[in-house]
Amino acid sequence: MPLVTSGLPNKTVAHQLQLSVKTVKKHQGRLKKLRLHSMCELFRFWFVLT
Image 1 (cartoon, helix red, strand yellow):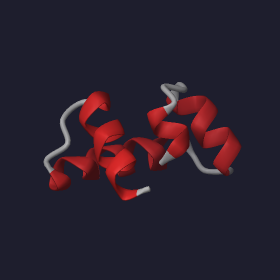
Image 2 (cartoon, helix red, strand yellow):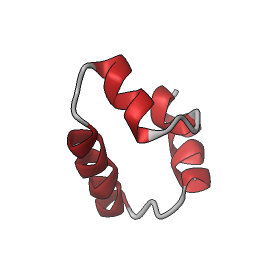
Image 3 (tube, helix red, strand yellow):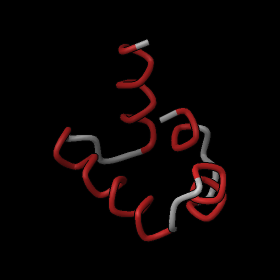
Image 4 (cartoon, helix red, strand yellow):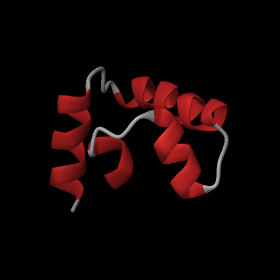
């Protein structure tokens, strides 16, 4: 979550987590299930959890 909310490109996040870019995009797509549609909403959600 910190990597996604930091605004890093998918390729950088994937490399740091040793995942494929496709996997990172898939997980970002699942954020819609949390009704988070923007990076700003994701950041607020993350801030509340921590």
